[in-house]
Image 1 (cartoon, one colour):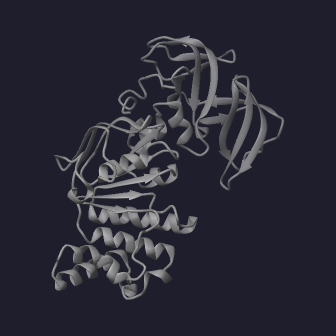
Image 2 (cartoon, one colour):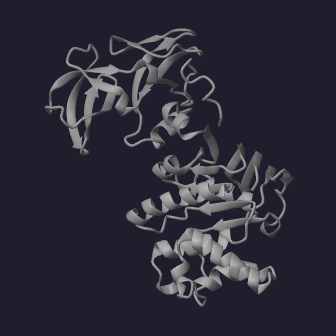
Image 3 (cartoon, helix red, strand yellow):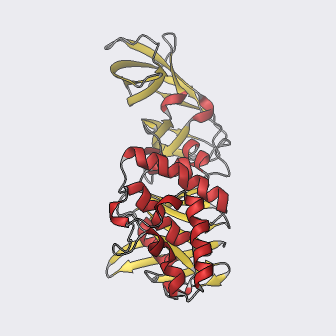
Length: 365
């Protein structure tokens, strides 16, 4: 397997810039997620890694070799597509063995390799069946088998579970992660589903409008988003934003919100003007005795928890509360924020202000 390095890679299609000077490293054996909304540049980035698109500028290294201008056939990678791209006139065995036959591998070795891969994927019993009659999950396993059988340096997957229903997606995502852990294969996986990325990935790049907004491990990206976009895109419900006018200086650990003093992580940056306090719903607690107040406007029952929406002087806020809490629509109650989990953002560029809590996490993008 291989390390993959992306250095200042840019892709232009005429006057449109699809990817803007992206830089990040995928370590050997990582399950790496390219995450973002449609049109953010994640698939274009993957296609440049694979050699299906050539970068306008920048460098791409696979296993230490610069491959940015080399075609896909010279990169020793395997690509798995959303729509499977299987050969309909072949059975399962024929589909999996096709890459090895194309390489001229002897028949006994092909049989052994196919049997090994089929055992890994749990499809030994369907090797002689036509692919046309298979379920979506089995067709995806066959597509994976055709990729795995080559023992490539890296696997590239472009929304491979997008065509499956919710039940199959969950099952296959678990199987993909287990397969990765078993093979320790460098895997780059494109998705627009933040839950899929958080569940499966060792590292995540979050992209928006061709820009890498943040790069890091899932927990850091969730806890300390580098931008308001990341804070909105990651999490369900997303991070709450409460806007306020004020200023904060280096070392300051409080802000004034709606006339109430709120503790925040000590700031390493100074900022003034319109600022935003960001906090996750699970880090807010309802407390009738708290000074900062909100009026309950909606509740959403989720089983063990409920999402309570309140209107405040600084905008709406959602609170994840125990479902056993009695919530009265229209009632006014206090809100307590966990100060260790607050992120402050500047509004002009949407960037998070550095604090002692997030120091070393922000700025990866």
